Image 1: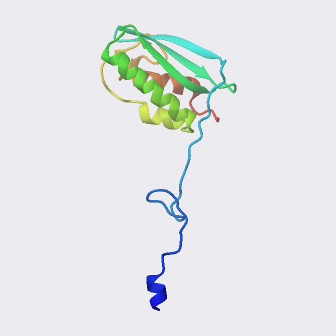
Image 2 (image 1 turned 180 degrees about the horizontal axis):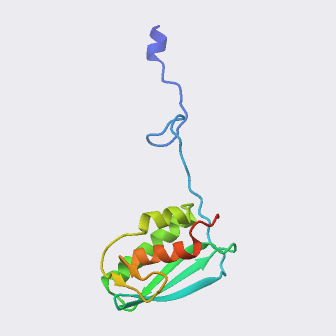
Image 3 (image 1 turned 45 degrees about the vertical axis):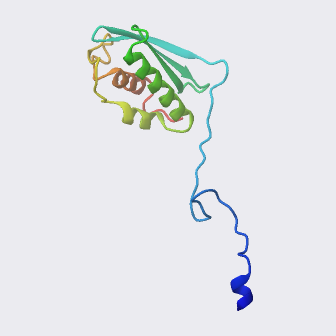
Length: 144
């Protein structure tokens, strides 16, 4: 018994900090777009704030990235739009469905909001809401 208490512990497999064999792990794989790809660019305005939405497409025609260019370069709204586009693009490239992305961003409310230049989307609660509605209008419900 004395030998058991004084012997060094047996080596155990290492699963990373705070992880063991019972802890499920998930690794997201990024589905990058081809170097050369199709895209569409859509001009819009919300409450007289003009912008351009560019959507880069996978070969199957589904969105893989988005870019928003607002007319007021350097403004806070431009910075938020760039951050949103990066997060949205990375999320869908890592497997978030278009439907799930739309559900998370549709109906977000902040300035600028109001009437739009698009008769299919007459009102928007924000630029983010407009983008979600535009993507829903053109790609919502499509299998990927």
